[in-house]
Amino acid sequence: MDRNMELINTVFKEKEDQIIEICDKIWNYAEIAFQELKSSDIICQSLEKEGFRCEKEYLGLKTAFRAAYGHGRPHIGIIADYDALPNMSQKSGVCRQEKCGDNENGHGCGHCNIAGAAFGAAVALKKYLEINNKEGTVIVIGSPAEEAGSGKALLAENGAYRELDVAIYSHANMFNSVPSLPMVANVAMEFTFKGVSAHAGASPHMGRNALSAAELMGIGVNFMRENAIADARIHYAYADAGGEAANVIQNYSKVKYLIRAPKIEQVKELAERIKKIARGAALMTETEMEYVYTSGCSDYAQNKVLAQEIGKCYQEMGAPAWEAGDYSLAKEFYDSLSEESKTQAAEKLRKYYDQIEDILEKPLHSDVILFDEKGKGYNFSSCDIGDVAHIVPTVYISFASLAIGNMVHTWQCTALANTVLGHKAMLNAGKVIALFGTTLIETPEIMRRAREEHSKTYVHPYQCPLENR
Ligand SMILES: [Zn+2]
Image 1: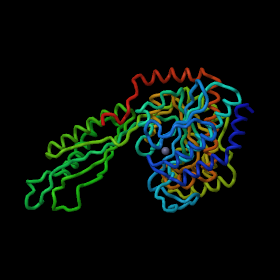
Image 2 (image 1 turned 60 degrees about the vertical axis):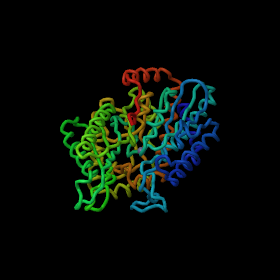
Image 3 (image 1 turned 180 degrees about the vertical axis):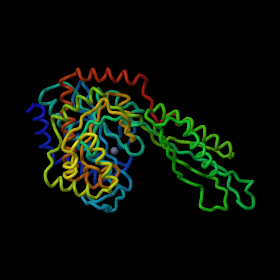
Image 4 (image 1 turned 90 degrees about the horizontal axis):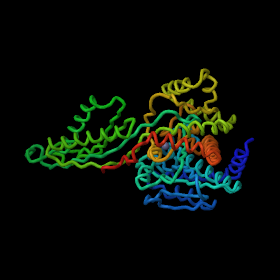
């Protein structure tokens, strides 16, 4: 066995209980965006104990941190998430929807596993630098509010990630893979209209209707779709319709918009047009309009060089060593899916495998899917890792903490994140990140090629999607 692999396995064996404890504590805290005080604390404290220099409240964000070990180049960045989702509370390992305790929130996106994997990888890399007396710095960046608030975009706006030579991230999924499809960019905005209230029967002419403004804006945006690029997605929700009384001219309304498109430049262009429509609606109704950006993230594409190279490490490490009990737990979760979800799962599997019956019998991914440069299309979800990728060569892997067919942002994901499935997938992902880190340190040529690709892909300086607020 490769010497580095042996060292990584030993460190992970030694630290296994601690890594699992970090994951499970974060799972229990289930703190949502920007409230991750206890979650960020536990990783920081644990890294400090391992000899990392920790900076809390990093770049002005209360629940962000930066932890570093070592000296000199390369600067290997490991990105950790730890925020939970609202209304995703779920009992651990229980295969029917059932809230866990009083907390409404839950780790329905497996960010507790990302945190554990990042911690384990950082400690293993530290051991590697120490034992081999190598130059290099491991930098863990704890990024809050991935789910809502775009923590990484805010950190990026404040200058984070620029010091890194490479950034490595991981995420929960039903597959062990180096994902191929790019993720789209998005921004979320809130538009408020202020009008004048009046008695709707006696003196409607005295009023100026803010609800009408919101509705006219919706009509304008819906007409705009005809002239928007086909790959754009524009969603909206009424956050405040003014009031419940129909006999009052509403003097206030608030509507939320979420704009998605393959590239952040396209999203920004659409946002500008939507602002014009909002202004038009205000003009038509003689109301006042204000808008605010509430979140946003840049498009994401894997750095191809890094994606190919981390794939080799993933292949070497293999999938987690699943056992009979793991398969039966996964089977229970697979069986709980609707027929539609099962059909969708089968379709996804057929993209990679000819024989899927055996996999559906033991529905845990026991293989590694490599990066495919020719992968076509988009993954229409978004992630603020895109903002990191615009600044520094970035790669991410997905780890199969979910049963086949299960998705993130579901109670099933919360239920599995702190079971043996979540634990094994997390430990395995951490090992892959660590092994890749050692490869980068020993083969600087990979980083040179990754940087070259990055400078060709991102020719303009980074612009935060939340700009022009
Ligand atoms: Zn997530």
